[in-house]
Amino acid sequence: MTFVERTLELASRRNIRSSRDLWLYVGRMTIYIATLTAVVTGVQARAQDPATIVLSMIGAAVACAILAIPITWEFGRMYLDLWQATQSLHTLARTDLQTGLLNNRTFVALIEERLEAGHEVALLLGDLDRFKAINDRHGHPKGDEVIAAVGGVMRDLFAAPIPIGRMGGEEFAVAIDCPFSDPDANLRHCEAFADELRKRIGAIRIETEAKTIAPTISIGIARSTDVEGFSELYARADKALYVAKAAGRNRVVDESAVDIVEPARRDGSEPADVRVLREAIQRF
Image (cartoon, rainbow, N blue to C red):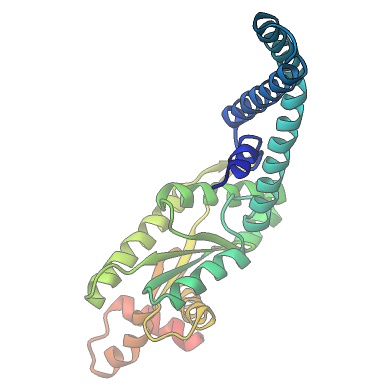
């Protein structure tokens, strides 16, 4: 880096991201201006004796520093406000206002990136049960409270950088990594997360004048093995979600459960839960 570049870096406002950065900017700029003023004053007073030159340089530097502080503060504050406004716009473009979760477009883009990078992920697609009835019976403000509460539960359960999104309306999605080489282990891993989410949402209580709202959620799971993109992964999770709804709601259904229903029925080993799923699939 050349001397000119280093000098310009002292006055840079690109790294003002906090109040501390603002004060550092003010300090750098004030020293820079005061030093420049002192040098110019020294050059102009070069015909004087050394003591006079030094006193003139110090006086000019101090006076200039006092005058420069409010000016540099205002410029720095303007740059900080501009950066904060830019960050706010960036956040608004990426997130859902009601829940603070990723919006549909951002969530899909992140999952597409993971799939293209070769990561195996599981899509947990959830939909609140009978949410329209909540809005109709208790009003949209209470419905909004339910949506916000669900978003809070999801943020508490899934730590960053796990993508959590609101796909629209009362539909939510989470994409978790499949960390095991064994498909059965990945299945248990995903179902454990999904069932914990179902239980936590089932524990939400929103008080109203008439009665307490106790929302539930149905969740479908699909894993990204041999999928071409997000659309296919979403369609598979959506099918599992539909089956969960048709089978009675407030439950978790993995795509593999949809696939094993017919073989179980044919060999006569169909337990009650598989029979419920089969009947739901027939309706599907």
